[in-house]
Every structure is written in structure tokens, then in C-alpha cells.
Amino acid sequence: MSLSIRKSGVLIAGSLVAALTLSACGGSADPLASSSAAPSSSAAASSGASGAAGAGSVIIGSADFPESALVANIYAAALTAKGVTATTNLNIGSREVYLPALQDGSIDLIPEYTGVLLQYFDKAATATSSEDVYTALQGAVPDTLQVLDQSAAEDKDSVAVTQEVATQYNLKSIADLKPVAGELILGGPSEWETRPTGVPGLEAKYGVTFKEFKALDAGGPLTLNALTSGQVQAGNLFTTDPAITANNLVVLEDPENLFAAQNILPLITKSKVTPEITEALNAVSAKLTTQDLIDLLTKVTVDKQDSADVAQEWVTSAGI
Image 1: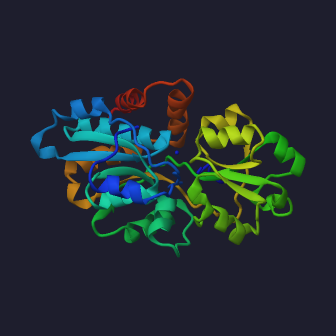
Image 2: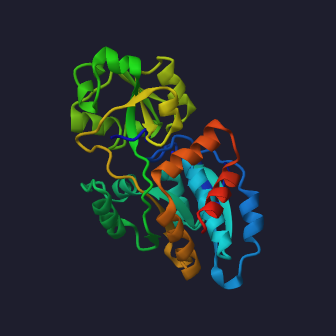
Image 3: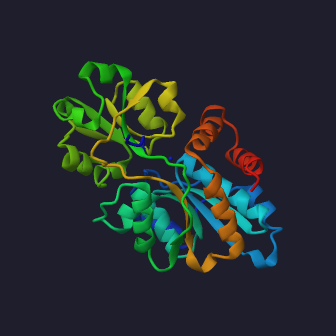
């Protein structure tokens, strides 16, 4: 199946501000169209301040969608429990914005998705299975960065349609769009217009050319509202999004594997890695499941609970 790619904090000073100014991209499952940032998590910052001196310190960033911020808060809570000084700067923007921030030291750690991260670093990547993608990714990241253990939790990009559109055009897979896409409008994050997992990939893998592409957001309320109101007939959503079930949407199958495996894992500056940090983050990856993501996101996006509180509750219940 495809992903409904398919995923705040204060703006990071210095070079990130410059990156935000120069970039108009979105990024990830990628996801991300916005480059705005929200306030950092004061809970993580204040609790992390008491960390043990030898355990290290990290600034954790996130992409600009709820799931990324949630996982960043989970990392912060897990690290704090191990005595690491952890602070957060959330909702930075797309991959095209936050990866330069990671490489220039504005942030040290960010939750990532294996398949789209591999494609970012290796445009010719062909791996699609979870293990093959992870193996290839380990060799593709720059020398200054490191990926730790991947989790079983996966959130993929997808092309989603309403039940009415699926019935009208007899749509079950992305391939079924080929004869009718010329009548339809596709919505998604702005970066989907040029990403190999977006419009170009749909054309190359499936021969699907839509009547129009409408730039909206990364699996967020703009895309959902446009889809359910009929402004677009197909939209890029993330597969863990509770809105899919709530709105009886249909995620079209992806038989050609346009969307590779997208397991969540930590991407960290290599110089920041300590035994305590590795242990905490790998413990999260060992426990986090796709169903966890769906359940936790429901609390954040549907029940409107605080993301940092939801993250702390999960870390505590998981015994990390």
C-alpha cells in the first residue's frame, strides 16, 4: 500500500534562519511544504537540564507535521530518562530545510523515514523492502551523520481518494488511475511536484498524468479538506493518519512500489552519539509499532492532547 506521505517549535537561529529564507521546498514521506516552526518543548528542555554530565546533550528537530513532532517528543522523553540533556526545536519544515540544519549543527537529531531518506541521499536507489532499504541507507548517509536502529513502525506516503471517487472510477490501485487521471486533480505538498515519489514518479512508474496538481500541505488539514470537499479527487496522505478511517477514505494500492519501505528511525550527528543516547533511541525503535503511531496520533490530532504529554505517557508505559 502507498502512504498517505503521505507525518511546533521556534525557528532555529543562525544558519537555519538562512536556510529557511532560501528554501521554499517541502519535505518527507516525506513530506513537508511549510517552513514555519513552533515553540520548543519547554517540558523536554527543563527536564533535560538535569541530565547527567557524561550522558551528552542533543537538540532534537522535527519536520512540520504532527507525527514527526510526536516522535521527536518521544525521543526527548526517552533521552531525558537516560540522563541526557534533550531540548526540542519542532516543525522546522521539509527535509530540504532540516537536513542542512542537521549538517551545520543547528540541530543534532531528527526522526526520519528510511525510504525517502535513502532517495534523498541516493537518487538512483532501487531498494524497496524494509531490510534492503535500511542496509542501503546505512551506506548512503554522509560521514558526519549516522542512522541508529530502525523501528517496526512504518508510515508511508499514499495516494488516497474518497470512497465515492473510488466507486465512480473503479479504483483499487494507483495503476487504475491511468485512464481517468486526466479528468482529476491531485493534491499534496508542494515538493510533490518535483519529487521522484510524487508527480514525476506517478508518471514514470504508472503512466498516470493528472489534469492538475494543487500544492497543499504534507498530509495535513489542507489536503484532507480539499479531498473530502471535492476540490481535489486524489491526495497524498500518510498511512498512519487517523483521518483515513474517520473519513472512510481509500488508500490506493501501490503494486509498482513507488513508495518504498518507510520505517521510522533516528538520524543523528555522529559526533553526538554516546552509549546513553544510543541505548535510549534504540530502545524506542525496539518498542514503537505502526499501531502505536496510529493510536498516539489519534490522541494528538483527534483528541487534541498535548504532543509532549502523549509522548511521555508512551515512554513511561513502554518502560524506557
